[in-house]
Amino acid sequence: MRYELADPLHPTLLPALIAAEDGLARLDERAARHVVAEGFRERGQFFDAVAALWVAGELVHVEDLVLHDSHMDARAPSHELTIAHAVLRARRRLESAEPGWALSAAGLDVLRGEQAGEGLSAAAALRLDAAEPPEFGEEEPDENPLASEFAELDAALARSRLLLDSHREAIADAEAAPPPVPKERQEPMGQLGLLFDEEWDERARLDAWRAVLPLADQLPASMGAAILFDAWERIEPLRRKHWLGALLIGDYLRSRGKVASHVVALNTGLKTIRHERRRSRDRLTRLNAFLEAMSATADLGLKELDRLSLARTQMEMRLRDRRSNSNLPGLLELVLSRPIVSTALISRQLGVTPRGALNLVRELGLREMTGRGRYRGWGVL
Image 1 (cartoon, helix red, strand yellow):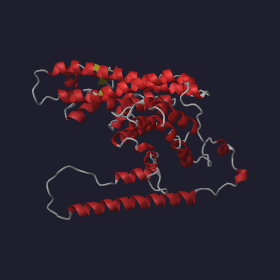
Image 2: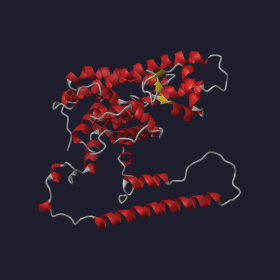
Image 3: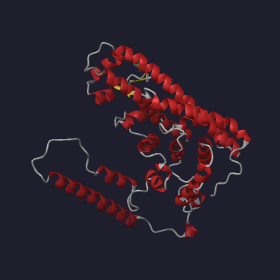
Image 4: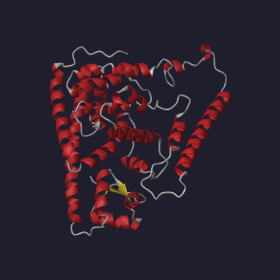
């Protein structure tokens, strides 16, 4: 389980290392000051979540992820779409946290879902989170001075009721479960690790991966990131959230100050590298492949900034001589922050009717991207 590297600065890695260092520095400089930086970061989160599933061998359409994130699904979400949305939520959590938070033991526990109680299932933990009292803005003072205290009591009772229900369900499932099968009569499927591996200690594997951090900190940021990613692929700390590795490397680059403007979307660059190189048995080939993936990520990011800047300039020309209460500026910002927008999404975000949303789309000159009769979407190519 221990990860060892004899020569982290092998001569064959230097050309790819220099290209990665230069490309990430250019991307960070432009993304930090660009006029469309906010839209670039938001769009990159969607594209990186879809690319994470692509790297894992699954296909998720970005328009389905946008609609699912807005709670406006056109159909029942698939298992892959649910995982892509989990990647999206994890990226947003990293964007809002301090640089390097995800690399700590506490941050890893939160990201892997260990902050909830051991006796609660994931669904019960989500229900408890949903029972938290919502936060509102400034409102008119209530006539009852004890209204806020009563609201907190109601929320506490709701959480307690959900907690008791979850424990009651767990006890009922345990009573209804069949008696344990003796070890000599167990199927060999568990021994093969096809379902569960009792010897798979995620805590120990995570500690082994975090032990590589001191070695990575002594190297250039790009090389340290490559070594951490290779260690994640070799050690495989998590069984069900293996996609978390690329996000942690993005947070590592931000903590080192290499890409401080955002959590870099490394999965978009990994898509361009062949699977045979990413999973090669030769360590130098794998490290070269990841360094090239970082260079590809930087190139794609710079092209995306240029494309968004050009699209914004063209759309701003249509905003001239518009009245001050026009919804076109709001639509411009919305379409720059989403890979694709639909009529229902525009209606919800801007507070207009579906017919008004179509009129705004026509006035702004957006390009239709879906080509479907029952579902139409627009965006910036």
